[in-house]
Length: 211
View 1 (cartoon, rainbow, N blue to C red):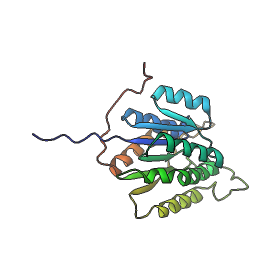
View 2 (view 1 turned 45 degrees about the horizontal axis):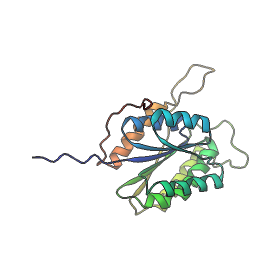
View 3 (view 1 turned 120 degrees about the vertical axis):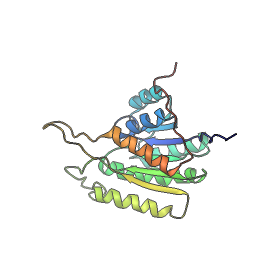
View 4 (view 1 turned 30 degrees about the vertical axis):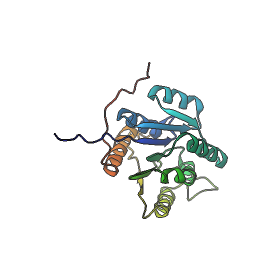
């Protein structure tokens, strides 16, 4: 008799899950049966998403050091560890600073996990038209890339990997918002995690609100 592969549990923490690419990632991983930890600075949007997907959620504003610190402390109380951190909160320099703050506060908890773990930094969809006057470099794609590389250097030699993903804008009619292809990017991220943790076997589940 051939033993079936164990269906490994996967716990994914996603910032900025209330909308945009964060919500797309939350939906994609929920559809694959992953356990979700969601956070956002928009409490109303976060509540709706967590109820829709049956996920654990907590408020967190990645712009605030104290908010991220409190969030990380709560995670340490409620969870032994988690497997994947997806930094998707904010845009421009907020995305960059949020990535750094979330990684700094949550790395100790990620290190407690076992097997291959992964931090995924989602770059802003496109270069901002005007950069923030106080953080011009952090507002740029190049700045985000360098900060992500710096994080990768911090965990080099460990079982924690760092990947940067940049959504690919798609052509859109004039005077309309750029289509960043969030759903396609979210599916790509699921595949990145599958490649990093081959022992995880996604299963298709309903993402409708539980009765």
